[in-house]
Length: 162
Image 1 (spheres, rainbow, N blue to C red):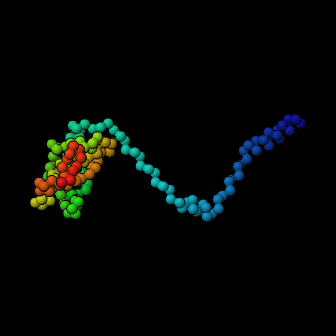
Image 2: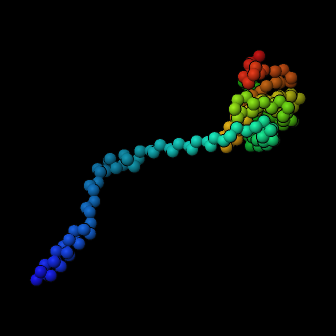
């Protein structure tokens, strides 16, 4: 008889352990709809991977490729459209990347003169490339000279308008 009582007790105990947990009460329908409709903020982009600074010889080797790719990606009908600060719209074609003018503006940022043409006009662009992260890219493009007339000069690594 003791054995029978023990079996009943074990069976009852086992049922209590495996009994399903009742579900939590649901939120009212209007709260559930608000929660589902609320837009979730986008995840922030991963920070760019910081790398060791590039040397002048490394910049000299890679600068032309980055600039040429930038021009190809942004060109329309084989010409780079560019609107300068005076409001003039240029349709520029690459003539020469002048690596003799390559200089480091600040850590990882290098600029050089890129000679372009729009018809009879010669336009010298100052193209700054960011080599400071693992994702190298063109940082800025500025019209430096139009037909030999400078719009700014450099004082150290700073651009000074004329």
